[in-house]
Length: 212
Image (tube, rainbow, N blue to C red):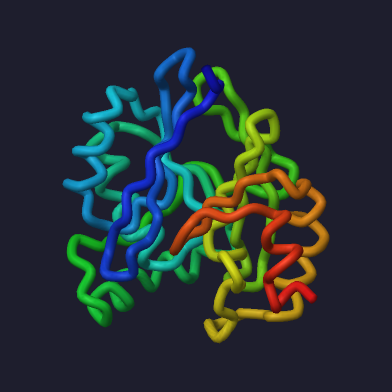
């Protein structure tokens, strides 16, 4: 049995890949990027039988973070991440939610901002934290090296990379971060992006036009 398992729960009109990641030994888990549709997320938690012990955020955009405050309150857990540089984006969640028709959206102040080099515990397993700005200034990636899984948020997609036409978006910084921090994770590293299908570092090195 693998030390971790993951369930993907598409949420919001943006079909954002909220995920439930858990330690198979302890059956304790984390919800990553609960952007909305909390009833759907709660149903998925119940189906897995996992005890959620925290919420993790890759970055502050509405489709990733808008449900974090309500879900944290209802589950009695803390919110960890993103980096502090994304707080101004989180504070704008109500405005962006109204613009895109996302209900129940609230800003959240994370209990713990995370930074490059931190580790996050989920049950008995640990995730490494990478800071990969460019899509947003405080964007994080969570990596479980033993299994070979990276939760990459909106940094890297199959055949594409994250948008950089947002406030403080920086295309050069994003590509630099992908090349210096994600590609060295190795060709077999599976990447779960914030939208669309999973991919791997090897596939993106071979086929992603933004990385040539």
